[in-house]
Length: 193
Image (cartoon, rainbow, N blue to C red; front, side):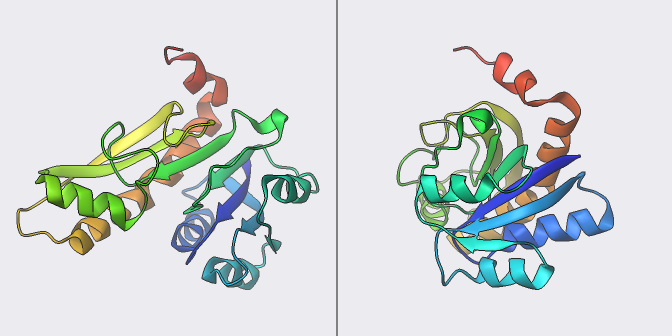
């Protein structure tokens, strides 16, 4: 079972999904702590409602000081909008989910609705999500899994966002379970450096 810290910046929809999946037994993890980059984040209120220790911290140093007080072996970025540098012992244990099929529509500036607008503008017929390990560059760490969704020409960016998020709700817990089964090194060791 993975002991996870959840880092978020917004509404906490991914936290909701993790909590639901843990409760129904489909996610082999326990949430040790939730940290938000914003005091006003709805996700922080949700974490408290669920009974998770919840804090606001805006620097990597402050986040890492909080994490040092908990037994954590995986950090899940859940709509966390900053490049995060974890403590050294967790450098290969930070997961992120990105709302496109990496390497398409990723990197600096490609987050949230910006991705779906770019997908729409390009006329893509598919999109999806990618769960990957985070490193010191945006969206560049080893991929754990990807899931695809079909798009229709009349889909708006909001429609695309809804379809992709529904797939994210399946993919992120599945990826955490894969990491729990195979270990982090499996994913880091299988990619070219």
